[in-house]
Length: 340
Ligand code: AMP
Ligand code: AMP
Image 1 (cartoon, rainbow, N blue to C red):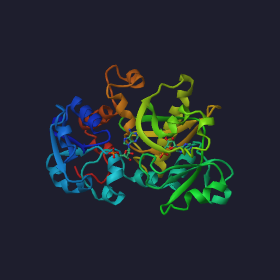
Image 2: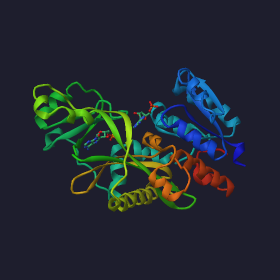
Image 3: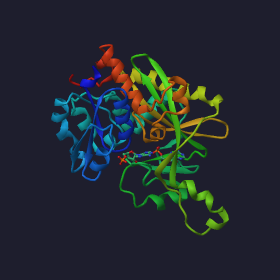
Image 4: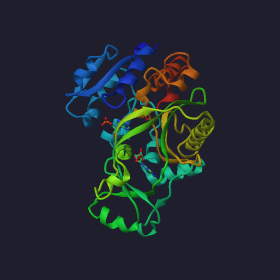
């Protein structure tokens, strides 16, 4: 039955994982690529078809064609990077996920309210530069992959370092600890949360500053930056897993109150920094599949505990859609704007 449906996504970010998972679960697969990436996506046997655009932002032009193919769109980070919130909402193509969550994710204030209600600790936010009494990180709004973020040591350095900025930004307490990105999947069909995998990001140059002794850095004007270039797998101390699970469950529970009844479902990621006293501080939540899951196309140690077969997050998404189709519950896993 699911063979009549096509799982479609933009050719970037985690598309290979999503489409491989879709094929493994018996769906047809479609990548919407651009002229540079078209050949790459065609080269994989599990990609049935490729539509090539000049630019990913032309994605809405393909919607008629997607409808004809009975496509279900699985969004990832590139959808947020290349399409506006308004464009997301205008699409009536079957869409895996709840678009109402996007508003709560896009606004740092709403995100903070959501996470606070889920009993999650966050770095302190400074509304006013005069209040800065500790090292901070300045985050540009809409910055992608940490680009343009600045570490600022104290209030004195703040004015000088931010004078050139004409974009909006937030000022957050800088947490010194270990970054850990936790990948979850919440199944609305089973009302069950799974920890799928975990990663840490590899960021330049903050992750390489330790290679130059502090004494040698003196006078060099080396400034940490946070541009992501890749991801590394992590397996967590088992005694810390219960708190990861608790955070995921509370985030899902509160999401049903703020953008109910469906709330947040499918893949999501909580981005944390863990301090030496084993406190999780949450920097951000991502309400869809994140690129760190690409490490685990063949499954992770955690997904193996739930499935004795390779289960990537991409495949888990396809399996949920398949299970929904088999139980005649497709609406439960699609946004309410979806016309099916
Ligand atoms: P792309 O389609 O590669 O331009 O990525 C879309 C968005 O996802 C951008 O905001 C990227 O910064 C982010 N992204 C891409 N790859 C990764 C990665 N490996 N880890 C974290 N974020 C990523
Ligand atoms: P984000 O855009 O929130 O995912 O942050 C990108 C990167 O900036 C993270 O992977 C961290 O390395 C760094 N970062 C973000 N927020 C903080 C914070 N409050 N304290 C320390 N580092 C942070």
